[in-house]
Amino acid sequence: MFGILFCALSTTVLAQKTVKHEVQSGETLYSLARNYGVTVDAIKQANTFIEGENIIAGQVITIPNATKSGTATTTSSSTPTAVAPAKQTPSLPQTQPSKKPGCKLMLLVEKKTTVYSICKEYGITEEEFHRANPEVEKSKIKKGKYVCIPYSAQELAQQRAAEEKRQAEKRAAEEKARKEAEERAAIKQYPKLNVAVILPFDLSSKNKSNEAIKVIDFYEGFLLAVENLKKQGVSVDIYAYEEKGTTTNSIDTILTQPMMPHMNLIVGPMRVEHIPAISRFAKQYNIPHVVPFSTNATVTSSSPTTFQVNTAVKSLYGKVYQLFMERNPDCRVVFVNCDGTGKEDYIAGFKKALTDKGHPFQSCELSEVKAISKIIPETDKRLVFIPTSASQQNLQQLVRNLNANTANDITLYNVSLFGYPEWQTFKESNKQSMRKYNASIFATFYTNSRSSDVSNFNAKFKSWFKRDQFNSYPLFGLLGYDVGHFFITGLNKFGNKFCERQSGHNVSALQNPMHFEKRGAENGFVNTSLKIISM
Image 1 (cartoon, rainbow, N blue to C red):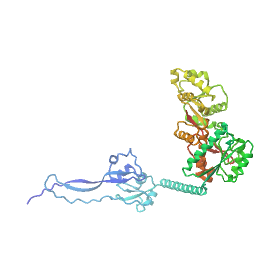
Image 2 (image 1 turned 120 degrees about the horizontal axis):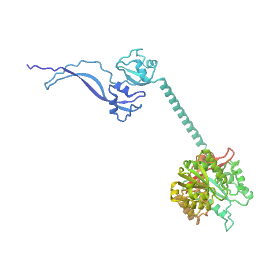
Image 3 (image 1 turned 45 degrees about the vertical axis):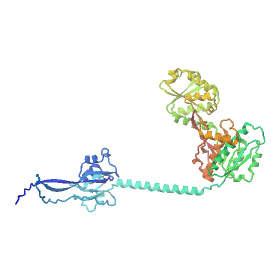
Image 4 (image 1 turned 135 degrees about the vertical axis):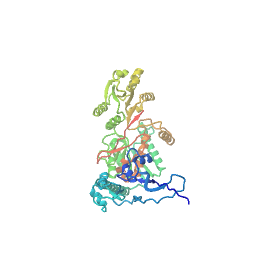
């Protein structure tokens, strides 16, 4: 017989497994490490994305070396061994039960865990704990059991508030959708748009005046817009009427035409004395009425369907000041006193606006600009010069005086100019000087001759009508195109609700951008579009 020698060396062997755990609200790295019998550092090493001690509800993290205990016997030699039966010891539950309703998480109870320690760690009261775990004795809690960690009263209140907010947002969205559906149902789409254009075409004259040529340019630009929109499926009929004389007789004759009450848009007239009669007619039949040329401030008074395209710039000075300061928050404004009149109100309003905002400015004489380092502190590195006159002669002198500065002085500062809509009309040499000093202007209209859209329009205009537009500011052909494009696309989209919805109607313009604001419930709409344009 062979004697068998047993080396009864007893060791503990850990059965390891990796667990994927979805973080619940209220859980911490410490509580997870305790629940799974691992260290906080082990969890962090297995999940390198965890920063500090922060884990977020909903994250799925890896728990390494989640263990259960067992006992085994090994030998110290290569001699065949016999394994002694291991002493069975109670093991902790390995499978977490499903969460009960109202539970934030299911917690595995460990040695020395008490109801008090659980409540303290998770911020709940003992009453809340026992309501969720009625089977647990008041003071005792068994190791190896899972208990429900309920949401605290504060968390429940937050959940209720969040749910109430979600429900309110849902109701608001449903109400918005309902109103939009009702509004869409209320829109009467026009299968065909009838448009009346009433202007002094001067058709009987062989030698047309400049006024008549510009009016015809406007009408022809309008026709090009209509032609372009017809390609997109918009159906339009144009009715052109001759505006004659200065009395209302010719206008009255036009307004009695059988088709006039059936118009969806009226464009014109040109003469101020004819506007009230057409505005009254448009109001009576609820027809959008466009006044394309007049800057008279009373055009839209008591005329709720009238749109004034060409607004007096004086009424927009406040917007100029606001846009300028938004664009130049860190400059010193230097008003340069020049010969000439007409801009006193503008300059006075500008100085007041700057004062109200605490924006630095000063005034100087035109001659002082020759040596700006003598009049401007070196701490003010960015200067914007604004001449008090819009004349070409004063701009030229201002540029000459800036050029007279020494190279050191002119490079010491960041110098730019801010000017007037009239600067658009100056000759090319002046525009080059403007660009040298980073000039910008404010304007209600602007033609970028380098734009491909403008070039294409000009080519098409010449192809159709065998001539160029009359050289004026603005170009009336482009104005006609922009008016036609804005109003016809709006009417095609919003139908009989155009006046109510036009504030949400935005289209690109070739020259005359349009953004209309209503000036009182009984008044019409004024174009307040204004831009700062770099030259």
